[in-house]
Length: 412
Image (tube, rainbow, N blue to C red; front, side, top):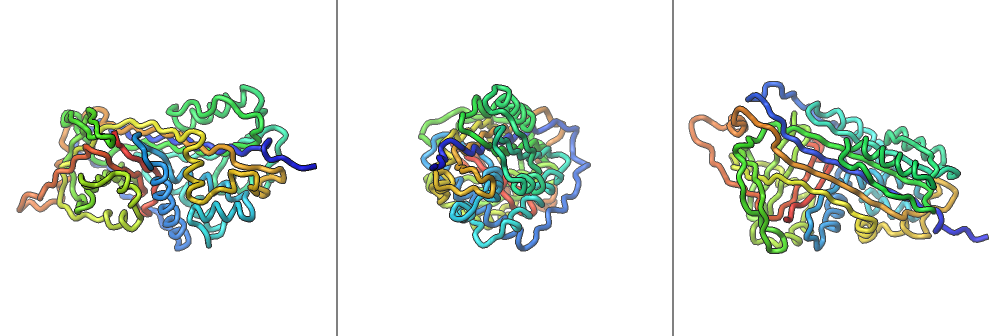
């Protein structure tokens, strides 16, 4: 009897919540701890480089032709696909690792990188709440292989559940997990479960960070933002003097650290003459490396408060991955025999994300002065204005490894 794959579906859903809240303080900071960084092996560095490059490729795909602001976690997408790859075989496996840029790297090397990063990232900064949670959900009557479940538990710290997918209580429990792991920012990820779904992989990332140098609410300024479609919108710009920065004929770049400096927001503003879509496609890890050095003494930063909610829906992320070469996993030819002897293919891969950047509260002293304290007293520093008042790219990165956790655009 011929076995049909259409009745057994693999659902992958990524949840991402990012919240940046700037708390009030009583003046100059005195409790900043020294961040020692994350030590990577040569093999782990190679995995990091590959995943950062994949992040930029996926970013370009998702941002293509977009008139909406974008925010997503390439680390979340990569982690889910690595969990998936642990159960893939033959050409399905090869396509996944090629798409991620991990060909030539063993599953053990990739798993070692994520096991190390999961532990290190969550403990990097006590002023940053960062949680990364993974889970495997299977329908009652469907059996995932023990070796696969054990890999997800040991390497990716995944919770494993078995539910009756035909009942509303299964939907409720999955949404409760989403609500809990994202601190209420994404209370609902599904409204129903397809009758042929046999398994779901889920990944939740939550980040809540406090700026190293606080913004003053009273320094905020209202202004216009030039949208990618040629219109303008109103924005509230946070203002701060900051030491360092980078600028050339192509970009202006400012890095805004959180807490002890383990994480930072990197804001990248293309030249005013640039076509934004072309600029996004042109991003490379080599350019990011070059822009990571300061060539400015100080910047007068104007950065917009922003709230972005982004949902790839059921097709956008799938289409992007297929364009990058990952096709067989979504077809009846898929081979996930490392997960189950029952035929499986990926039906849905989706990511929901939220970001809120806000100055929050009040500050009693000008931290912009604090940021410039390293400048020599014998002369005034050269201050370069940097206004993020037109479409720009932003990334959230870990400082010692340069690993990209989150990426986005503000285009309106």
